[in-house]
Length: 395
Image (cartoon, rainbow, N blue to C red; front, side, top):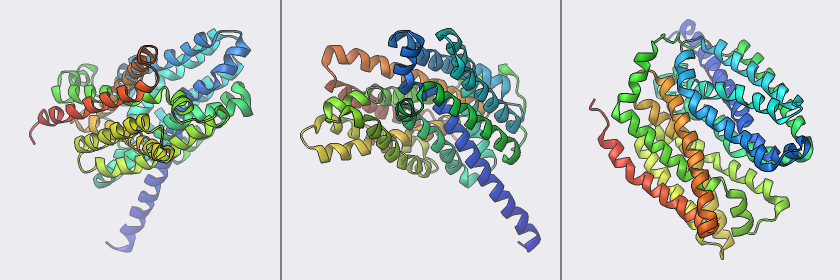
């Protein structure tokens, strides 16, 4: 390679790297918008004069909208120029967060939550495919993992950030901050994001053929079970830390933050492993998840060992986000954006199911049983992996 060809290649590499960073930061903001509200609920309920249960339905509204709207919205929009699509989504999030900050009642706030929930799965599904399309084939797993660094950080840190933000600037201030940052990222996206290869427009009927492919469907089913296992315990992590690990309430936000921060190690590990074998990586980290959650529940008399188990839980938990996304996208040869968004819907189904399972276990078997129930679900996911591997098409 001579100097004249090397210079454009280096410039292209730098621009691709910048694009991955912009996608990761945008993903963090977009997914944080979904999860930050959990930490804001007490102040929000108080200021709007509603019950905490009513305020909690805003979380349900967002999650179920993501689950149901993801596949059809992605199928309709995935062919658009990705830089324009992502810029438009970020501007929509800026406007929606500003509306949330100004909301005079629960109904306006619900609208401000419903609108961005329609767009979140479109970004989540297409960002993974876009990241893979602007780097060489051998770097695609790491590129998706870097985007998922933003998504994983938001999933794991969104709730503790909301808890801290509620104390510092109030729930309206938190939404104003999200609105401003979304606007900044929209400008960065429009100016600095490299143009990915043009997506081919595929009619809806052709895209929906995905849902008749057994290998794709069993990969989706595996994601539902994996996320159910993760969120059966993670949904109630705050209570587990207080009652099973003796964490004081004033320090709870920082412990949740530490869980998320340590867990980000798993993002790198997941990106490395998934490039070798997606189903093998799923099996390894589901096993580690089961071990971490199970030991955390059983080591209450040994605080140091319990902390190590918590760290293992955090690492495995985070690694499984990009692993599941890459595994499902690799299960198809076409319509990868729709496949990625379908995995987002499967993940949200698992999140909701896990919360329901954990909520049913607590009053009947007690809080201590939550981690063991989650462990059992993780082992079920592990048992499913050989069946998934056997259905993989030849060649």
